[in-house]
Image (cartoon, rainbow, N blue to C red; front, side, top):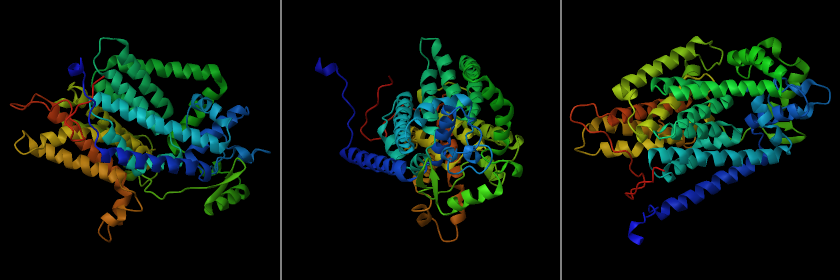
Length: 469
């Protein structure tokens, strides 16, 4: 019957036009950069896969080997390479490494954009909201361009975390929490900092998810050992301790020979490098690099030891707990789960010493907090002052995230305050942490005489609600 069919939500024409324009812009930049820009992070992944295809060590900078100049990633100046991941990740890039470098970069950019759509779709279905507002913000945001220009991997980890969140919703099947843990484990394989999401699962007593994470991690290490036992032992006993201490850098005695290093650094200084037989522009976009509170406190160095990330993580966890109140450990429903997961993502980004501006794509789901906050902030609504503060934090945090660093952003600041630019992404993450905790607090029904926020509202003004799926 026609009357029983649910109507599709109305999408304003201006949003469709804006989506087309923004998508065209992003795809155009990605296609251009795949041909003329190095994509320096992807170059490290690609050369690791190429080294494995050649039977070589992916953790060694092959530029100093006889006849191996085609395996230099364009940036590495140490004897070790810039590949920071377990051998299994290197094996994942072996098929891409069979392609010409420009083609591989274009395929990688397409995969990242597909992962963006999947990630935001999963968060939208969990929050029971339309995906279009979040997609518009993501396509308009500077970190997405940085992510594509560098060829980063964090949109894949965001999609895996979105899958974990979706699987954590209460459903009859018992395997879903185990699947959620497996998704977090796969994200940890791609980005070690995703390990910091696991304590948040434990705080919510998601023990099956924690167990799924542990079992999957062990299975991935075992698979690594089956594929290449020697390289797996080397990674966990020699390479990983170096990476945790220095990141991509290293001690002075690990530098390449001076004559070779000078020739490489001279090409980098000119802004163009030769990789895989072709010359590429080193970078296309200026930006504020840092998005880590830990690195900011350590003087923007990655070499601060273990105590500082642990202390920052504990302090941020305590702050989130204080802001959210009892709801921090409660199970407040789909929107509360999204808010809690966003809090986990912001704490992870801020506490990790290896977080950069392009990793801020994790903050895009912050859009899903706005409808509930703005609804509760209406005049006469209960606790509207708290909701208004949360709304302000979310809006300012998302604006800081979206506005280009070196272009439009300086025009928004008074003269003499450009130093704030260096704290742009740290401030954005902190504000979205406050917004997420505010949603959790307002979702809690434990306060006297105050009902929880509604589960979802549209961000389009159309009054429709997406299907929870």
